[in-house]
Image 1 (cartoon, rainbow, N blue to C red):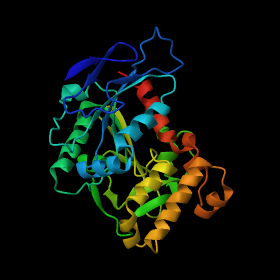
Image 2 (image 1 turned 180 degrees about the vertical axis):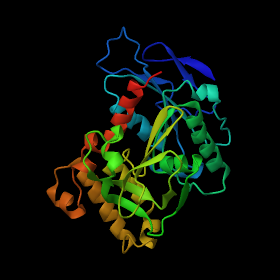
Image 3 (image 1 turned 60 degrees about the vertical axis):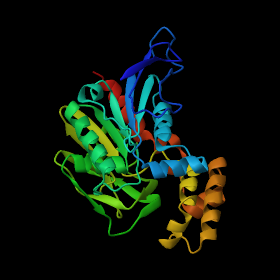
Image 4 (image 1 turned 90 degrees about the horizontal axis):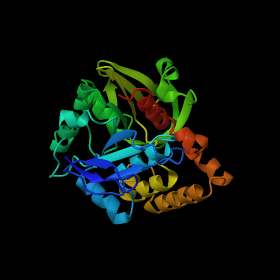
Length: 323
């Protein structure tokens, strides 16, 4: 590892040799509520961009942000009153060098994005990430992850992930309901007992790992949220995507036009364009009652404070348990 001067506060920002520079690498975000005399870098967050190189190349080609950038933006937006420092690595790159346990232990938290892989794939990129997830538990670093993050957390701890026989869950996931444990869990503080979310996955956790607690589920996917407590540290995971918004999701569907049509979600490819255009219109004007009604979208999807409450609560958890 090496160090570089932070452009905002003049302090040192760590980074890992496997970095690919992004706007968030080597950056510390100073919240307005902190005076300049107080060092802003209160939380060091390790972001794992879990997508295959092919997928990231496709995102770049069409001008979509990478998953790691979505995560950095989301965590920053939910870090009111504290500073955040991000180190981003790409474990699917050939040049990837895994952080050591000592390096991992210096972080306050790790964040795992979604991915184009399945957790049961016999693939070096998958093995790397499952191993890294397992080591976050061993080193006592709290993690948060969505979709793929939840699935590899289950596998890393001895659980099981399989293809969902009900098919792909994509779009707005309906009637996600908190379990009894979920209603009492700090990840869902301020959240309704039933809510709707962005979904995009074909696999599901079919066996919880030892120490895993089911926090939420719906009729399509039994495990929509899970907590794992190990080595005195609690890590939180969701199957859905709080990092998405309507604009990003419409772009994701558009680049998967042929796939979405062949799976039967649209009758013809032209319908995908209409759907994506209208989601973009709703993103630009969230008061469009016609589109809200047409697609059954409400504040669970539109209101960032509701949609990302889990992330805000995780950052608060990091503050409360900071070593």
